[in-house]
View: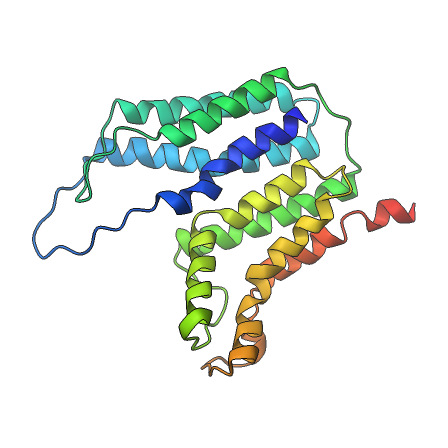
Length: 249
């Protein structure tokens, strides 16, 4: 239970970030820019927050006995990185936030939950490998888009509500939603409910071809298969099948 609380707290900043997005328009003049120190401090805090669930998931899969201690260290580092943002303001055109309070609070909750938790039993290596692949596929797909700017799918010419839904899914992708889903499944890998999180990963995998088919929109892709987000599809199917070998035994 405490491990579940820890991973939920670690992924909460990602899931709640969509409600905290700020839009302030475009500027035709030179605007205030953050200092290099602020960029470094806030960037480090952002990546620490985004990668904490991945660290906890991999520990839960491969070193569950070390999860309480090593996970607590990772949560403490994330807490410290976010606490530092209160001392280094990030000045930009939309204001100067006083600090990353939500990730700091969530990291603190995760830290306490990990310190109070007990080491878990080891997982079968095959199951750990499957969920590791799920997590790394979700993480790699997200980083490819957000860091490298690489799209792994071809986009259909959606309009109206179909385009609006796709925009929201794209925001979820940029905010590490699907990485969060994969890491929650990895921490719960020993439970029967874990494979059903694979169904969630099928949403970003299959939305584009389904929306294209139902809306009758066109596309300029080489084939309709290019509309499928294959890494998420593979991750979702792996998650759904993650307990099959164990059941067969």
